[in-house]
Image 1 (spheres, helix red, strand yellow):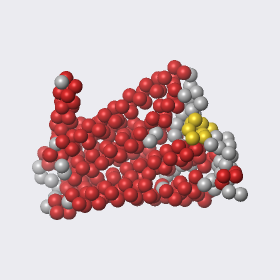
Image 2 (image 1 turned 135 degrees about the vertical axis):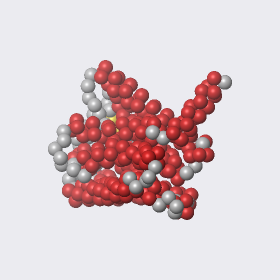
Image 3 (image 1 turned 45 degrees about the vertical axis):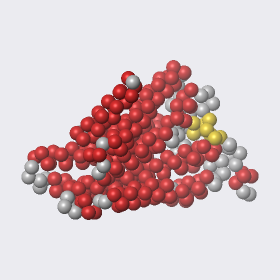
Length: 314
């Protein structure tokens, strides 16, 4: 019997954050505000890097790509989430659910690899400053960014394809605000522990290897920074690397709970909150984290905002 003969589910119901209508409107307003601020902050960083020639360096090029990634990362989940707050049916089509599922994991995986590349860039800049310009060329930057996106989007394509092929006969209610692996696997008529094991094994390998690489890079950076004789030089290095580590801690701390220790006994409500942190809150905080402690970025963002005010006043 093939999939078309078995599957009767044509859409799923995303329960999201159930509650009375006034609460739904409150959630809608809060998430919409965070979404708009996230888009504005990350777009401002991209514009600042593009306009300010002082920021045409590998570190800021990677940061601009990271902001571009964050825009798509929130956009693959938040618009549908906002629509569900105002909807009585809260439905999402079968194909839309799996499209969101694929892009959510692909963009998240790309973020892991891009954070590794950013850690490698800081390692070269601080630990091997004399060789940095000759190693981290524009061509290498482009190659590393392309590899991040390519591996990110290829990594989960096969496991998600096999989950897509599973029969879904009903029920079709997902107690979450997005299409995630656990609720989807739970709704399948033919449970497949092998596919689930492969999916979580792949997630664990990617997350653990990338976080170990990032921590190893910053350990070497920290050792080099402590040997810098100038206090100003140490402060600048700590400021740059500190913002990176805050972002890494926020992102990895939450995804490790979800996908490295999925059987940790957390409630459905806790899973929703954890997913909300790494999928919406972290992209919102990233522009603030990267700009508040960076004078060049603050100056470039000030120029962008001033330019927007001039255009609006004219």
